[in-house]
Length: 292
Image (cartoon, rainbow, N blue to C red):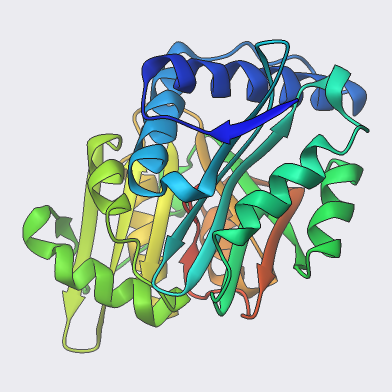
């Protein structure tokens, strides 16, 4: 078996996609969940995300091959003293052979010296054991989803929210550091390119931002729960008619988000974990599934 870095090429991005699709489809089937047909647009974004990380964090992205065929992948990033595991996936037929453990160890070397670690973990028992063995605290995660009831989005609108852009980059990074201890750095360029809009609130009392794509809240960070709730209400109000809203990876520290979602008629369910090392759950904050 060969272990090598992931290259910033379309071929390697497709190999990563192939491994992750096989791994997550098998895991969902094992849990008795309905098969989800891949969205071509999600595939394009995922491959772009792989190339983004391979380009910015080449020492944190690894692929294992057996007989020339990709069987496992780990993608990770370093952002100002925080190590982020974006993806860890192994083909079903290669599981139980130490592939995932080897990948996690190799990617983890990229995070040596980082004070904090973050990842969004699936409910797969083997993945959970591996993350716990690596020193992560597992925080059960919740997800809001469904059609938005706009009559429940009662907000006086006294906090102005407006579209953001590159001019707000310093503001976004400042909010990042206050909310989770590290800026997203180059990830903001990727998020802006692959979101429908960036919403920003900047007042004397604090600041915050939210990336939205379709009905999905991609990432939200703010310096207070009041600002975060205002941004979330605005994002939900902008969900296109007929689209399903989704706000995922919420821990118990995000009750403000749960309250807003329930007011808007969304359903609440549990799914996976937000796994953290050397830090408490960021709040008020809604992490990105891969870039956190």
